[in-house]
Amino acid sequence: MNYVKIEDSRKKEIAPGCRAQFVHSDNMTLAYWSLQEDAQIPDHTHVHEQVVNVLAGTLDLTIDEEKKRLRPGDVVLVPPSVSHSARAVTFCRVLDVFHPVREDFKASR
Image: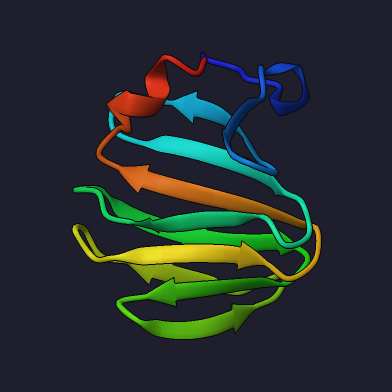
C-alpha cells in the first residue's frame, strides 16, 4: 500500500502565490493547491484531462473564455487541450486531478 501524508510532502511554487503538493499514481496526478488571494494561474493548455475541486475559498476559473466563479464543493471538468486559467478571489484550497500523469510535475515530489 502506498500512503502519502499531504502535509509532509514538499510544496512547490508553480506561479507567484500558487503552491502545490503532488501525489502521483501510475495513471493520475493529484495536485493540492494553496492559492493566495489574487494569485493567478496564467492561461495555458495541456494534453491532460483535469478535474478541479474547490475545497475552500472562492476561485474564478476561465475555460475557453467562459468564466465561472467556484466555491467549496464545486467541481469542474477541463477537457484535454482546452485553454484555461484561474484567479483566487480569496485564499483557496483546490484539488486538481489529472489524467494521464503529469510528468512535468513528477520532478516536484
